[in-house]
Image 1 (cartoon, helix red, strand yellow):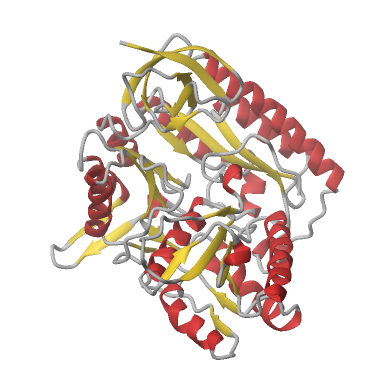
Image 2 (tube, helix red, strand yellow):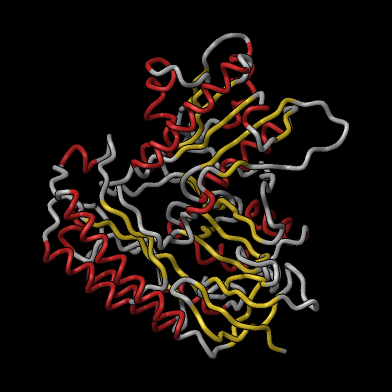
Length: 472
């Protein structure tokens, strides 16, 4: 599968394969844990939950798998190349295990249920396979492996939200953090494996979410991103109070933790995002004016085959509502090129949708059939690979132009920026994101430090970065 270099802020390609670290408390003897994560931010958030559970059971983290007692790889099944990466890494871990026979190698996350028999029995790559809802069972499963048994727990749950577990913040800048507000997905998009690997949708209680946000703010964090496969369908029934908390209400509760706590969220679904959510975003200055709204295709027939449950016209209505209620809102998207039976005219509908919206960012890829999905069962993957790649190239080229257009429109404007760290290219520059989620780079000013808010005027840009300077 060919992938675009223009990535959405949901799937951070720079973090793929990242090893998670936490400083060790001195004087404590412990087993060493190595966790490597792939896929979406939900997986990275889950790795923090896993680390929290195991740190409470006598482990410490390490950045070197060769010295680890337990090696976990947190997996993603969304794309074919993610699975290929995992297999390559498992081969590396298997070689390391020959040098250290006592090492435990385990697979966590979305690939666990689908490939458990292959990993454990056929390919004999791992000792332990654990699905996204079974992380509490890890200490018990590790103990079984210590005793000489292979361990598997891929049971899905209708209740598990890990609401009572405070995730350790691994590899954190101490400024931004993710809060998982719900797990699973009830949407049955025909191309997607998530409902089968993460189970049915269930929402965390709002009190635990608000408490986590408050605790993060008190610890010095200044931005949280609320995570869910479909945040707009968040719904929690408070039986004691006899009320239902929806996503708009939850957004308001988190925004009210403190005006200095920025709030972002991902991902929205076009069928569920309501005007109430949009008005809530518009009401609170500390809720960032940015929405990731995956379109996947600009053609209604293809959307129906994808089982997206909205039409081209519905999606455009939601875009118009965003533009009306939040005029300066940044919008990003996901797009699939070459879905089953897609014609040239239907591909042109996707290009015309892009021209209509002019997305700030996009995550774009060719269709890759995933085993077990509805599309794999119902439809033939009949668009030739060279046609898929050519269509994707057209989408990518168009998006580059639109990304540049959006950033050029931000030149000359003043942006409130939370300093997240130093620029990747130079320690003489700070970087941070504006309300629309654009990355902004500006010279270091000794009066300000990481974690401070500053006003930056945009002066120039590339197709991916706004460049400016701090103003008084």
